[in-house]
Amino acid sequence: EPEVTQTPSHQVTQMGQEVILRCVPISNHLYFYWYRQILGQKVEFLVSFYNNEISEKSEIFDDQFSVERPDGSNFTLKIRSTKLEDSAMYFCAPNPGGPDTQYFGPGTRLTVL
Amino acid sequence: QKEVEQNSGPLSVPEGAIASLNCTYSDRGSQSFFWYRQYSGKSPELIMFIYSNGDKEDGRFTAQLNKASQYVSLLIRDSQPSDSATYLCAVNPYGGSQGNLIFGKGTKLSVKP
Image 1 (cartoon, rainbow over the protein chains, first blue to last red):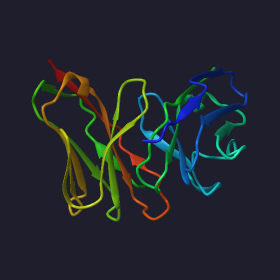
Image 2 (cartoon, rainbow over the protein chains, first blue to last red):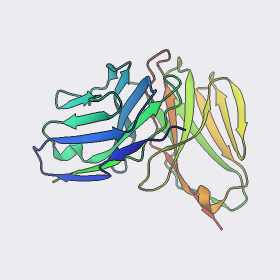
Image 3 (spheres, chains in turn purple, green):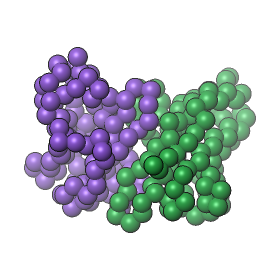
């Protein structure tokens, strides 16, 4: 199981502010996913990366969201102008061997006030 | 709409008993199936994955898949209080390089000492 860390563990922000969530360190992962889980609800797919490009994205992943791999190892998820409904746990999930068997990071709890 | 359905529970079993968790999925072409365990406030932890019809055993856990009935289950033998958690069923209905998972809402399991 690959070691994954996510920072920050908890982010509190005001509505309309930008937030950047990080997944570190990541190496040798071809496939990479972001999911979110609103409190009490299902885990939902946001976006996937394959070979440093967006592979798939859900309808949740609108123009307010973006993903980057700024330095070749870390992955970031940016929300440009947060809304109250963006409050959720955000998980990164790499999988080293292929598209399946995704291992979730510890998550970032995002609270939008 | 690709759906994964689980009974939300709670499912309560005495310590030492067999816990049986069930999941149905809507997309008949789904190829891979996963069970995650999620403790309250934590990220999903991959327990098992199964691709072929039949049973797959790993320690106290057995996953069962019936593609004709679009049904996957997880049996936990000799249940322990530490098994008390929410169990998430996840399905990859896409296959190939598209690995984003569809999750059920989870079944909450309570193992009573």
